[in-house]
Length: 402
Image (cartoon, rainbow, N blue to C red; front, side, top):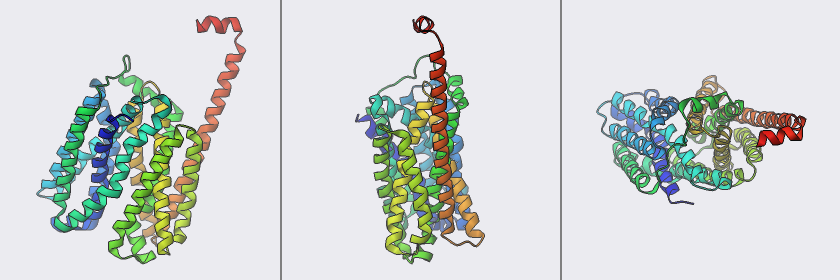
């Protein structure tokens, strides 16, 4: 794998850390600014919405510059946003900083996926995408727990200062290691937008929303679920999240490897197994050992679907994939926000802290159904094309070919 993928992975590590570390620092931030925990939760919601809307916006704004330069500009935006969060004098300024940083997220992973895929041979594209996303998954194993520990020990502002420094390292790595890759000639914004007329692109994005939403329906409420239901101490939640992160790392690499061999079967297996495991989590959440194993499996199965879903979008939007790729990253965050909201609804309705697991199972099962539908439509389209091609006389097909 090219060294340029390491630079992309470093940037992804910083972005993954800032996205998730706030969840473990909400009490400290809320106390420092004198706001309630639900109000502090807007730092999570605002970031997710910023990713969703920022992904297409920043990608469109970057259509006039090379992909490398756009990646560098996005890392610059990431640095500014996190620095603003680190020095924020009031809560509103920190919220602005979170939104500014989030604007870089979707476009970075979207453009980065295209760059990563272009750096390798066609049969290694999903693996290259997975290598970049490894930075995001490792962030959940190392960056988030360490950032949470630092924030709880010496202050959350120090954590965001360190994240800012990670952005500087990522920017330097991209500047030095990523080759200058200009956009393909003849590809304009209208071509990028036209990709959304392809029903397969839309189906892949819907799978992303539902499939990854299934993961976050459960993980968003892991702290109260594990402390109130499984009986873990409050301090154990950090290590349970490390298990989740380790599962993400392994699942991401396996998903990238097998997606290059059999993309749709990989989606069937990962989404189907995810639905089953999430449903079982309503039972295993009552036992500490079983709950820990289940959390790791949710991370593994959830992220095993990420490289194939991202590659599916790139394949279906062939020729003009940048905007579609970035919007699909926004789709992950739309799934996060939707599932967290639905999970909160069932808890508020009195169904208990394990109820979001059923929400997640239904979402993952719906994603699997869409994957089956997508493959069926593709087979029908291919069969129709073959019939049309077969109905044309050999002489005419030869003339058209020449």
